[in-house]
Image 1 (cartoon, one colour):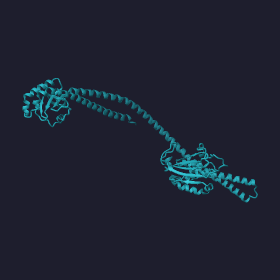
Image 2 (cartoon, helix red, strand yellow; image 1 turned 60 degrees about the vertical axis):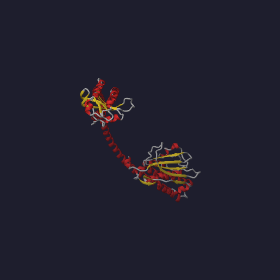
Image 3 (cartoon, one colour; image 1 turned 45 degrees about the vertical axis):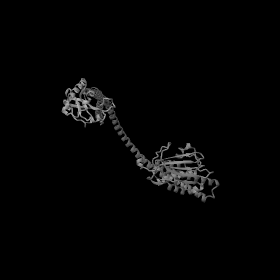
Image 4 (tube, helix red, strand yellow; image 1 turned 180 degrees about the vertical axis):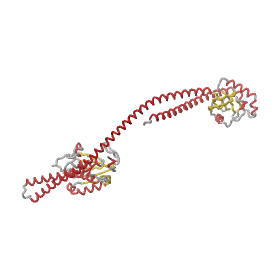
Length: 495
């Protein structure tokens, strides 16, 4: 199944081959460069010897050959003398040929007599040397005419050197061309390259063997892991099927529970309405027959029935946040708040509350639930006001541009809503408690309520993929902060 070994082998041979070629070429280039440098230095030294031995004695002749034809120059007695002098210095050196050019590019002397008198003024090497630059290059000659005769299959280094007799900065008087036979040195370099190449190949084969063992072991591990993965996928598939069956069973149970809750709430509320209705009849039609204590009993009975009915309705609202939710759509939060304030107008007038609503945006939400969330939070602010000072409520909203250090909600696409008041407040340590069902911080005698309103808000925020929290201190009011996604994904995608 896994082709790790095959891929490794191919990649290794390609990498090793490429590295070997690179190293071989690099060694060849560096060795050749060193050889050229060393040979050029030797040729420079030899040219200086010739400049000191030949040039002073034969300068006047070599500089005045323009009137001589090529044949006359080749047969001139001075050429023979120069040749004898040059050969004495060449003996025992790798010099295979010597040429001397005048400043016009004419070969005025050469150990190869046939080249004497030729014009080489256009040669790049002569041009460079005439301008003061030394030029050296390595070449292979299958046939070459040296001072000892015809040479075959030789590696030669040729150098064009400016002729100066008065020092490195003196005027150029001519040009030397020296050919050095470096065949033995090149062979040594090639032999060293072959030995190095074999060593590198041997090292690469050793490394390949070690890595092959490692990769083969890794391949074995991968095969085992694949077998384990397949087994895990099979087990996961079985568990998924079991989970799907459990979800179907849970969905049926939830549906049955929803039907039961509806029926139970209907059956519970009907007797409560009758209790309230009969209590009203007792107070209107039998008020003269009831004593003051009887009137108190009827009032208590009606209050208890009303609280019970409100509790049932709140429990139904809590359970229906997810079971009776509607599809998300664009909701203008400003319009929602304006509608709630209109509904709570009487309560607002009774408390004398000053409510400031800032600019609110449009987000994706379930309209009825968002309305219920705002209504619960605003009603709470109206309920828990301080009797000795005017109530002020501020409602604001803004998109989050960055995530705060203590926030666990991603800021991208999140809208933050804050509802702040200057009411009685509460201890910050009770923040988590107030969002639980039936959790109250005050007795029913102090403040009415069932202890479910904030739990409904928390469940609505969670259903929308958001959060709710609060900041408060006793006597300093409270600020409820709701974060909701601006754009909602489909419910099936989120789940």
